[in-house]
Length: 298
Length: 108
Image (cartoon, rainbow over all chains, first blue to last red; front, side, top):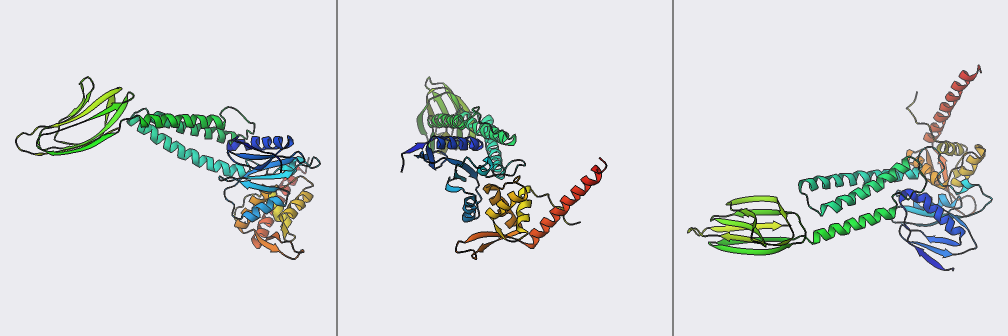
């Protein structure tokens, strides 16, 4: 067995032509693919042979034996499949044979069956992503806050990436472009995701339920790490005068509510960086009534 | 006139045509097609698998295993009654096209 090496080069689905070309090139250089993968491929050094490779995309193989046999009949050696429906085949290269012997899809009209299958999947994905992206965008307009921005960009990144791919497949643009490669999409996605998670982690998450009879006092401190809109859910059911307050570090009241009965969700508060305090003060007016306050801020 | 049928692709047409003279395996169909089309039509493995799978679903062909040739089992395909009708309909369609072309171009 020859020397082994591993490659982590990844290709977008519509760049499968480029992947095949690269595999053929590697084979000519003496590195033979032994196991193909989306993110990890293994090559073995062997300068005695030259192979031609083919990739098939098919997630709906009702008879695996028949599938592999149909390829074997024409000299294709089945290698392996990836988790997401790509199948690797190879055939020893013979310069005597015409190029068409190394094709697996030979219907000339329109997109090949394989491309049609891929287009269907990509279209469904694109629609699903767009619906989720638009829902996020609407929520973002209703309740603006910074962590939503990278998440919306994340969707946009996917949508543009798949959109470009679909367009190129439909235009039968087989040339390999560096415009928006898979790596760029993945980098943007990872950065957006990390930023989004960080912004969420550094948000205050305070909540509490206060129940009391007669005069009651309660307070809780929280920290705001970056200026943004924060949202307060507040429920109050008080029989005696009670005030719910949020006070900043200078003592200024940011929010106050003294109503008897409150049931409000997502009250928008614009808070700058700093330390805040939630104060709940109930004053007994002689009736000895009950106080009940529940709040959640994030 | 029967039900409206879509024209067959070249691969589909040749697969049905090759099976009209008796059961055959994928490789045999591919070879025969090449011969009949004078090398113009080659059916690649991906196209072959998809086409035969589709035609089995439509009931135009059926799969059968052949044990008669020595010991090696070979997967054979056989034309059904429905497949035969589809092929005939396509041939009639092509004849009509040709007849039309001939009648127009006769005077040239």
